Image (cartoon, rainbow, N blue to C red; front, side):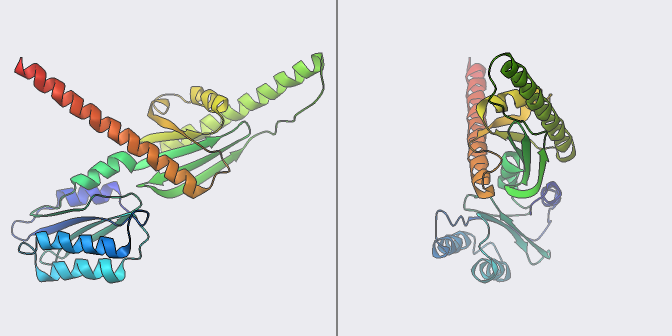
Length: 266
């Protein structure tokens, strides 16, 4: 699995003489078959066949066609037999189809994926429980659950009912407060870039208000579902939101560049 250390090591690598092949391949089984992405691989390698060694080309083809287990949605491969370099990252998020040959690994696409999906936390909360799911590059790394004080429901009417309702509200608030404290401790340990919340709207709103900065500032959105949702559904919903966040960030950067250029031309 890709880590920040991997990114730093690749970014620091530079060869004064040998060429380094950087290849990104979309292998998302939701969108294509094995034959389709294998054909895309051949087209990519054909583009640079006069720039890479036969050993590098065959190593990449052998891995994708014979060794890759099909478990990811994207592949990033860095190869230079002259340097003894062979790094493969199977990613839980899709990548564009790209190929580049140079003296340094082309890590910009990986860096962008890390910015979008590197470390994020999903918090599914209700009035008695919270379920935390921590992801790195779209892969689930750790889960944590907290069961709070039970809330007893009563059918009594009149003044007694109001008193019981106040007690239930107090219990629910204490549970949410403990859930928020657990989330803060978890965030301080894992340092996620984004937080995603799930649960009933009123509960999520109250929980969000209990989160201090900077963690409340890192909330990227809410996902449909609750603490009982299937992990695959949670992952898919989270990735969809983060894709939207990344698109919005890119649009904002483009708008800022256009505005700056327009001001510079005046």
